[in-house]
Image: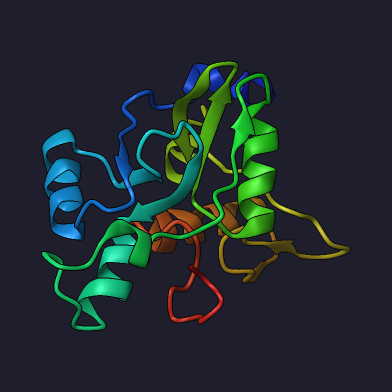
Length: 184
């Protein structure tokens, strides 16, 4: 059953509730829209362009605006967005999306169709929808299993599953220990 889910086309599981704003939009305006639409990120482009130039996430607001004492009513998206934005083709599989997100240490992938962005997939939505008691998206080295989010080693899948449920999913922090400076 899990293998079937991982083989699904990413467009089948992507969230189509995507908002694209001009790079000159203020962070405050973007956050208000994020709140109204119950979304955790905004895609960014230049006015009149279909090309996505960046992405601003809740994390960007916290770490680049709030923590740096920047005024959200003055700061524009182009000043705090993450760029470049990796995308995935709508014909790709869930497994391919997870592999890209893990390899690049990102949590969101906009999904590209023939006419532009058709949705966005998040690591949390993908992992949260796997129809299984345990997460088997791990790399197995010779004797231990590694957590795909923080790299912690475990003797068996059950211990790994408990760790992911308790630390990553339970706390809402799906990409590992946020104290590490290499996470964006």
